[in-house]
Length: 111
Image (cartoon, rainbow, N blue to C red):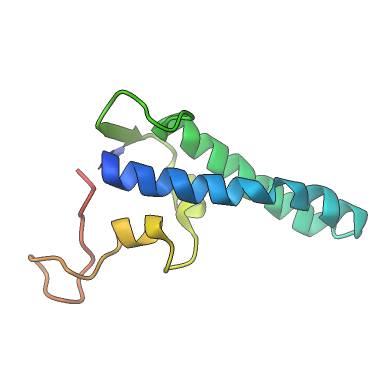
């Protein structure tokens, strides 16, 4: 089942992905340090981020308001697994839902 997000959630995810992509040099550093497992994990994280860009757009200002996330659930979960204080996480996991009470996750930005 695909998830559709609005422009606000997309823009937050986009900024988070761009931040994550600054770690692309880490693969080289990890390999130089002989930490090949870390290099593979970093590679996988970056691949997930780039796959997410395929869904939300590589350009900073695409000509649409809704974005369908077509990644498989495990891959999407891995791509979204960032600090709970990042803007992208706040867009998708606010605790201000009007349906389920103050501690229920909001679907703000999700359709």
